[in-house]
Image 1: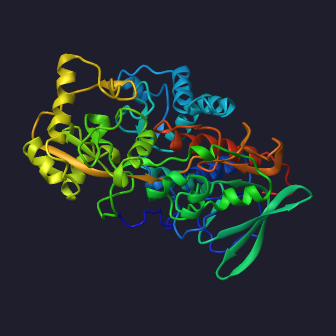
Image 2 (image 1 turned 90 degrees about the vertical axis):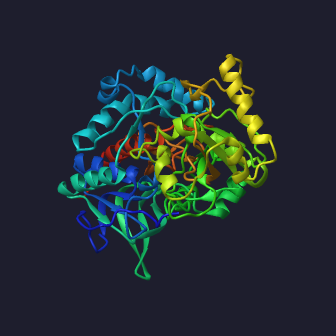
Image 3 (image 1 turned 45 degrees about the vertical axis):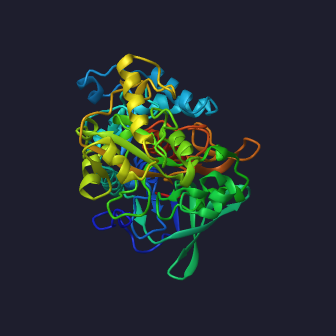
Length: 476
């Protein structure tokens, strides 16, 4: 994969020294942390963010940068009809209806004003397209690095500060309430006191031991996500008795290149959503390619070698989009990550599939489309409920050997609508809040594209404002 991305601290409101006491202490420098920091500062709190790494950005700068919003200006400009009710239904359906309805409702209620809040800070969105779990196009692409810079800069103007290279070891609690953290920095340890703490430390996608404990089906998956995403915040909250949700639903993302490669930006590609089919190493299809890419990941991991091919033609290649990494097929071709051939027969030789199998698979797929017959695996659309199947017949032909990667874990602590962390009995742990990837309950058993970036902004903003409302003796 490419070198670890991150937003360097130059030009941001960075302090070199740890403070003794703050109003709101935010842990984690991805989008959830940035939104919480700015929101707390806007509410009048002295807010400081601690980031374990030397750069900020976390998983946010490794993502495809897609936000799931409904009712936006960009949708209207493209003639896309969407609604909050449809957004809610899609999230619940994709999540297998084991989501926490209160969190889904909160997201739906706050997503549009959060979208406007971000645009007011200078965030810009590109061409809207459909993606996994969406019944209408609502994936809003953005430059996540520019987004984070905008939020941190705005927070800095209000007096908020960042401290990098500050790894938090433990939450401090006195009299039943959280009062700060223990920080490890420069070979020493010290305490930072706070009126409230917001956990925005991400998941545990980089910790194979935690994945083995909670998601053993991911043993053949590649690992990515934020470089420091090792479950620190989740474990610290767990020590204080925090409840947990969605741990059984940790899944990998389909479409990543099958081995580390300098051309892999960490997101993979999803040619299947633009017209490709997925076949195993023998050349057989094995899944309805329109299902959410987390479910595609499960299906691919179940195949021999846990690696499968995305096979497509020139028509799909023509849909390449360098604005959206998962659809940037042209970049993969230039990087030498695709096999190419003038015929399906030649492609089969290059892929090493069993004799005649890939040819028969493509022929049957094309014939059923031409005859208007049902697909063998139930595929009706290209992705979710959008786009009609189309034949793979226009040369040249392409294929990428694809694996499944754990980019994010999307499970974790239980929270209420104020983003207060709840203990195992459903009672708030006083003055402890959470936002972003380590929050459980929102996604449920599945993941709709764009809700990770979306919820980081929405829930981070709520957490920051709620934390800032805690009673404080600190004058600022």
